[in-house]
Length: 315
Image (tube, rainbow, N blue to C red; front, top):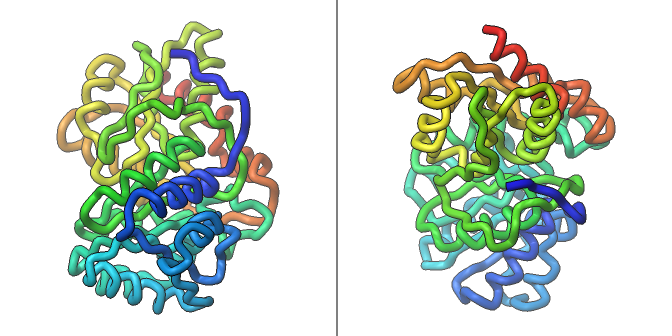
């Protein structure tokens, strides 16, 4: 299947659209926000269900505690703030009040990764996937575009248990068809190939498709898999692919330490050792700049995927 796009939208708007739909579909869904309503695109939910919204102010730890209490009372809370604040700032509350007791809380984490852009290193969280995937029972979802983020939001509401839902600030291509099924824990084969497997998540899925198109011109056939759920990891789809290709590249907008790549490497080391290259930020903080500038400098764009594929093929 050839993927193209006709528009660009931010993934946070996909979350907002999904949340607004849930306002009508599920009376148990409630929303909380730490003074970032516009940034999290929660306005439509509030218009539809103002009685089911809690503005906690800039008090993220308190928000997580309130969300845990609401879950105890049978509600399905979506607690929204920037990814940096939803993890590092409140890790103790998430661990003790949500993960430890397996509360049905959905942590809606916007503005993740380098592509937050001009706000700089203090806000560009690159370790959140690692922090969240290490918490027992926590599901970690990192969708790739507007449509998939909307689907992921709806799926998170149906799932019983804690979910970390990660999305971003910049506009990116919308290329996943609205009708494409979304299932937590199940990767999606986007393109078949025979020479190398590219496993990507988030914004890097589109960059990987661009890289595969470029490599095809050089006679290199890439299989591209969209891993929107990092935990639980779809081991079956990855193992089936590397049995065919024998080589793998992982691509993510995250530190290579603790991210998708390490999850894949750990699984392959146990079940089918495979040469692997990582496209990820190399153990550093970011800086202020445009998303495109930062993705190029920190080598997490299509060009970086092309280089990684050639490295792994040369091994």
